[in-house]
Length: 119
Picture 1 (tube, rainbow, N blue to C red):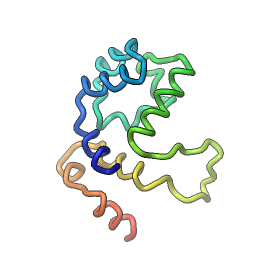
Picture 2 (picture 1 turned 180 degrees about the vertical axis):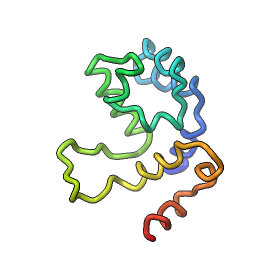
Picture 3 (picture 1 turned 180 degrees about the horizontal axis):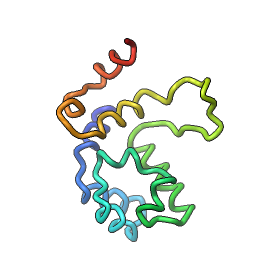
Picture 4 (picture 1 turned 90 degrees about the horizontal axis):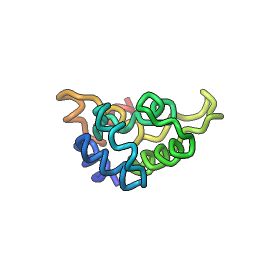
């Protein structure tokens, strides 16, 4: 799954638009391309962010968010999560770091990320 996640980070706006169309939402392709949503930015797409893109149908939002989580291989953070609970899964946290631009983010490997978390 990690290899697929890393390839996702290289997706262009058009790749993301094709993916949203494959989910059954061709009407939202322009929302993603006009807002320059690339694979790196896709990790931040959730039900809070989608209305800013122009997507307001709640049923569609739930399906898109579930699709993003599945695509990224991350688990959903429950609304009832306590601050005493452990952090979110490592893959989600790693992908947030990789979503940034710059040499450090580009060169960061999953193993380095895990090593840094242990320190």
